[in-house]
Image (cartoon, rainbow, N blue to C red; front, side):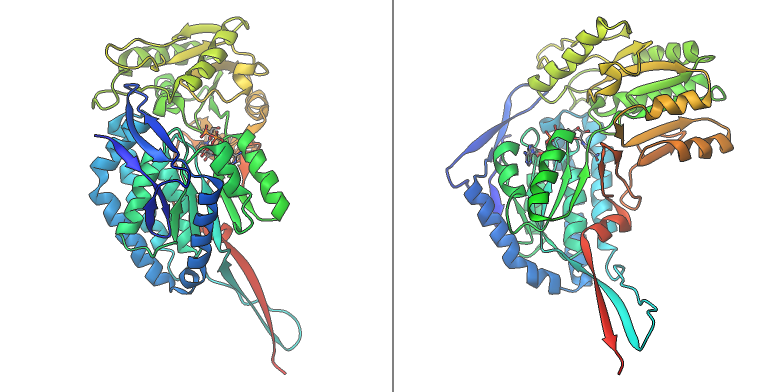
Length: 481
Ligand code: NAD
């Protein structure tokens, strides 16, 4: 079955102005599985105009009415869960079991969560001196541009659209050209759920053309971006020109710190999930494993055992598969480049290091790869590889662990594995990371603020944080004289 999507502008699905399309290739098979329209600057103009026109009416719609639309969307997503999970896996390559059991469980819940914000974006009364009543209200910005990456396409689209429209904004979504299908399917469902025309628009296309035109558009009042640091910088520059706010959810190089009071097998299991889930194409991947020197050997041995016993590389539609293909050949070359350079850097390759041939499928399947004795200042330890490649290093003291953990430009997430409650909180407090997981990894929930320190970005998604971000505070003084 081929998946074909146009642009969605003002409730209508249509071709690009110049008829341009992008072929969508499934990473597992290498076959073309669909096409999307590729929006031109003129299409972006039309989409922003539609969003701008819809904005006053949508802002005036009661929050409870908006919630009704979101709940209808959540139902539609749940009803199409099998189909959406299939699209996600065929387009992005993640194992179907994960698409269906994780992404498609989270998706309707996230929409319902933001529907639950009805009536909760409250203002304040401020006790100023004098005969005044002073209060604040939170108001939408108008048109929000949502620009998203390819690694969790459906959830990323939801995390932009649901809070933005619940806060009373209208949206123009720019899906990633490498995995655009599930966001486009979602936007179609928005129309089916009855969300009024112009409230949710989508302009698929390339970053350099469609994305740039959208982020530079004078009628866009807020840019919500998730993606790489390089693009985040370009977007912040574009926003600076017009002095509009941005949220930037960027990359990571997250440490997973294992102290000597934990069970080495349990620590290895957490390390395994943290780096090999979603083929390592996870912004919060635990890509640096810092292990206390006294249990280093035991943890590494257990990890190698898990790679052997738990990894099934293959067709992501097969329910037993745990590791699917990387997204495309360009990305594979990037991952392979890091691995090849690391081989000559003094780090010790313990397992993996290249692609695994799977009969009848594409050449994009990369083996779980572990390097030991990695120097934290090396390229492998500093750069985001965004693949199933782990750097292992040792530490002797708590101070050393923290120093190593923080000695990267990124600050998205960190894991602390210890049974010592005092140490857990002490270390969490000293880590430069927006998300700290104690004896756990990868917990993300619509209710829980999420975002990065340092070069991993700024602004917080999820929960009340994103509702604050997507609204501006107005302060009103009323003289009682
Ligand atoms: P990317 O920056 O290449 O692309 C992200 C999006 O930006 C795409 O839709 C792309 O078309 C668009 N884009 C590219 N150039 C643009 C420009 N100049 N102007 C406007 N838009 C432009 O990132 P990617 O390769 O799609 O995703 C991988 C990156 O995303 C990794 O660095 C990963 O860590 C990060 N990521 C972060 C989070 C988070 O929550 N912090 C979550 C997922 C992914």
